[in-house]
Length: 424
Length: 103
Image (tube, rainbow over all chains, first blue to last red):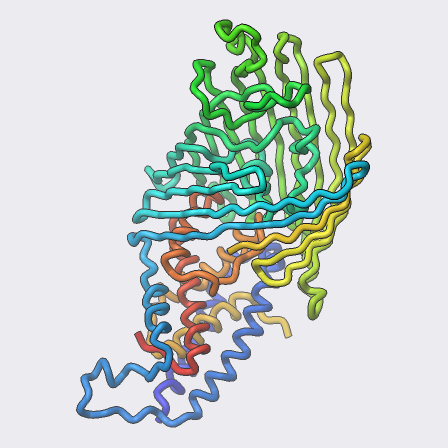
């Protein structure tokens, strides 16, 4: 008698009832809708596997060698020795073991910008992760492009308590949701194109938003499905325009790694997640500015220049449509001490067409609108509106090609770009 | 034909048990079923859900620890996701081998 037949029948009854009862209590209708796509794919896989199970059940039971040890006799024949090793690795899933991963992301982009011709660029960012037991995580990321190799991230996190993590090093600033989580090329629905408040040429800040510092972070459950996340961080102060000071507009740039006695930036973000498909966050930070435009380096007038920034972010999944938005406001003093401000916002919607059959299911139309306003040191004022449309195509779960068109109200910012991003 | 997600998840765990040729504890099965839900919901909050078969257990431990810190999932949810990934991959590898596994 096939030993799997009765076991399968009994387990089917038990588990179907178990699963239904288990999930019915806390499965909101909205969450079911958001996961139904992936679960539908899983169901198709299950159907195929079920057919294979029936085929296996129809086969006669293997004849055991009475002379062989029991453990050996019970083991099925395997033709692939590497399978044993892979299964063994997967079974060692205890949190008390260490973990290690080398992955990353690479991308190539061809940009056609109005009045500037064609530009080709590429990035390759390997990411190293190491977790020690259940408490320590080390993360490092390198950013390699045509200009060289730079350290993108390097931080260590220590889980001191179930809802409290201490983190230190060079990490994405937890100010708003784009800077910390949505800016990587493979996550950003417009791949290399940042939304208006983070635009490379006219955004609120200049450059990447990775900071050298420390933070306390964590999450707590506040109701059935609802959670509250928090970040409190201390970071190296920003400079005007970054180390090269190439931008004449005196925008603030984080990421300073040089020694300074200017007091650090202090900030906080609080996020509310009423359900897995919704999140709202409020961020604020304040501090002094390193005045790298000071003519006399013995004068530390950076200690007298200050800034304050606030941010409201949110994302929500409406059926199959992912909606994201953010609004940022920055008040600061320019190198002369004059008060300036800048503010920007964007709203973005994307929809993966995975309810369609064939290659159409890999498409994802995306729409984004944004606006950026900024006072300038020469008493001028910049007001930029932009709108972008794009379509992503997911060839596999790790390769995405994007076609993007962006129109802006300032000269020279209209562009058309093609990007291919892969993760490994 | 639409089936309730919990039924699908339960069937997935069932297949893993049948194909694996072993009886896993009810706690483990519940944890894996919850892990499938956590995996589907929390990954897609920010990005496309990765292929569960794309990494081995050691890599998934580091990646889920990263998400525990970075995406604010709890220790229990991390354990559930790991349990789901193990179950999913056991089914996949057993299918590819064409024979039931029994570790």
